[in-house]
Length: 500
Figure 1 (tube, rainbow, N blue to C red):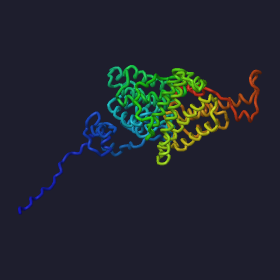
Figure 2 (spheres, rainbow, N blue to C red; figure 1 turned 120 degrees about the vertical axis):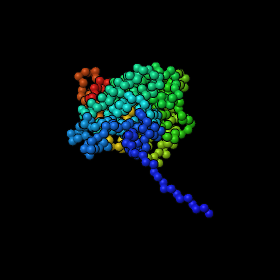
Figure 3 (tube, rainbow, N blue to C red; figure 1 turned 180 degrees about the vertical axis):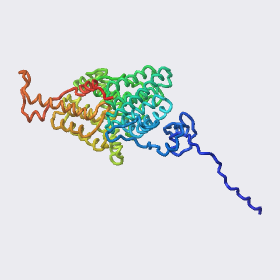
């Protein structure tokens, strides 16, 4: 037997350690291929590539006193000195804040989950105007959460990032390349979010209208690109949210660009996203019906039961859609209430609130009722209280107007002082911003309105033709219905000027 060959000792190939990889690969302790502007490893593994650090070599004394960048906090007086932060640490921090925290407050729109967590990540890596826009939104959301609303340094930082994004967006649009329509629409959407967080209604609507026009000018028919369909769905949904308050059409109808529904109307929902998209289709159908004929709903309610006019047939079809949604929704409700986690139960409660609101609209319109039934008002308030109890005890931002419109409707259509007072207290108990309205602003508005109603009802008017003051107990229990409070709030908000 031949002697076995002696094994050679394994020699490790020597290679000098390089420190020129991207920031993200360094954090992950991965080998970087150093492809620029975005490394291939980050791109293929769906990570946000934070780029490459400066090649300036620091002195030994500077290295010993290198500041830590993992946290960005205000000082004792609540200010934040961004200009003292070295390099682009503030940009990295607020981009990280956006993808870690901000996106979770914006998941209520249809198709939002995939768009914010996947599509936008890819788009911002290849379009220079999206990165400063995302940074501005992350910083604005940080201000909203911390309540440090008047920090001049950070306000200037937000404005600089915002203006940089607009300048680069204008240059990109001037080139007129059709392939860039998707990131431009995404940037418009980010601008809408920034202005909504600032409470700047007019600017938010201006960006919404700009995005809506782009669909009509650049896209002639339904597109097969999923990201463009998702963007169309989000723009349409935001237009519906604005129409809730303005009580008129805000944006052009984007239905031709919306994705085809994936769920079968005969099958129960399996995911909350499916239910959310179905509710959004109800919004679209109802708004189209109202925009074509503002008196449609009222006329349909007054027609005979067997009437076959166009308005009545359209209304009956809508009532059937609401009933179908409830049938598809109930199995999902039972499953999540039994097995769902906290986040799922929070979203479920919001969807149940919207479902109940549609059921009330259908029932009350069919009965020509001027007020909500007491049990309906109580059920809405109980659902709202449940949502607030499940929510985190921090300021919350949402692009979907669910809680605030429901509270306004309970106040507006419930002829009970007790329920109106409870509605205002619920607004005071939670820091919430839905689109451009905060719970505090709405509570102030309703409280002022309530005090004016009580004053009008308890004090005699100088005009003899006016009704005489009634008994105090009757006044406190049955205050009159006051229509168009939503539109009054919308007009008030349109004149409001933001702080920065």
